[in-house]
Amino acid sequence: MRIVAASLAAVALACAGSRAHAPAASAAPAAPAIPVEYHTLPNGLRVALSPDRSVPKVAVGVYYGIGFRVEPKGRTGFAHLFEHMMFQGSRNLGKMEFIKLVQSNGGNLNGSTRFDFTNYYQVVPSNVLDTVLWAEADRMRGLAVNQENLDNQKGVVKNEVRVNVLNRPYGGFPWLDMPQLANENWHNAHNFYGDLADLDAATLEDVQAFFKTYYAPNDAALALVGDFDPKEALALVTKHFGAIPPATQPPRPDLSEPRQEKEKRAEKVDALAERPALAVAWHVPERGTPEHAAFVILDQLLVQGRDAALHQKLVQEKGLTGEVEGGVNLLGNAWDYQGPMLEIVYLFHDREHGPDELLAAIDEAVQPFMDRPVDAEALARAKVKARSALYGEMESFSGFGLADLLASAALFDGDPARVTRIPDELEKVTPELVQKVAREYLRKTNRTVLVVKTKG
Image (cartoon, rainbow, N blue to C red; front, side):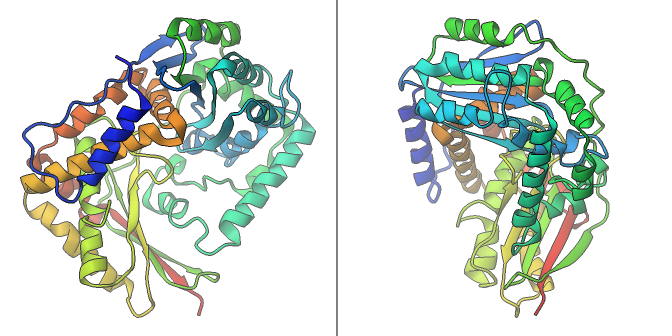
């Protein structure tokens, strides 16, 4: 039952090598066997365990159900602020000592804020799993939320906004710009990085209340992937996290988006940019549906790789740009989110090619998928690419990629094992379903266009 890193990497490598000449096989290769255990502690903490005894290391992921679009109005940037606050010390660890603890034991770590969660992860030698779980529980139990740390990290976040968005070429393009333009619901459409005025107005009481509400075990999932015995690992998780009390959770906001019925267009002038840019976004089907699986296949056919339709049309045939980039969920992958999502495609181009010319070429590339079912050989090749991308996600960052998928599915679905069913969901996609999804989701009235102009 155990899956080893070597076998998964081999599958991914074989898939990637086959993308240009994949035959229309009658049956997909068997998906790798991924063992998954799922438990819920009495305090609500969701726990996903996937043992792999091949290498003496463990990936640890702790996910809290507070992402960009879950944060309340008037609290923009709080989710991101807490990503920083979580490294400022806890009851038994001083400022930055969590980082020192992991690194001094030969591990690496990071954290990030996404649409629907904020996560923290470590990849460490398996003999220090007990220590790392203790440290994660220590900051869940009692983060050092004091005025000094708050003031310091507010300054850090505001400076990050200035450096990464306000004072750099193409700052926020397209990952920050496009959700604000394409979505109607405030939760999906506000400035995810945080309004500087909201950050300035944050009081210590505001921040303490935010932590107590959202950084609770019943708003969290923990995933372990690697070298451990599941029974022993669950005992360690229970020992460290089991006594942390749950918190009353506010009703989750309504994240739904209305069906887009009219194309949206916007433009902005980027004084720091040297070349114009263009981004196009389409709303995608709900995650976990057959239509979503079909759109993942469609993304491979349209966007991913040099054999994709947009690359062939805009780069190879017309020479309008050197590269077309994009995908479903630019801040993660096609599976680690919960609410509405966009497929975003973007490119940079020379001034002699205007947006209308580029959009016409995009339309030429998209239209065949709407006009007729994709042929069997192209569909088979896209399925190989999609599986390769999935296995690549699982293998990324020394096993953290699989932990990310498991924790997300535990947090959103209460079913981390659904990750093991994704290959089958992709394989069930038919040419007719791809065409149906293309007609509904790639129509012009479902798209948003952003034109970036240079100042000169």
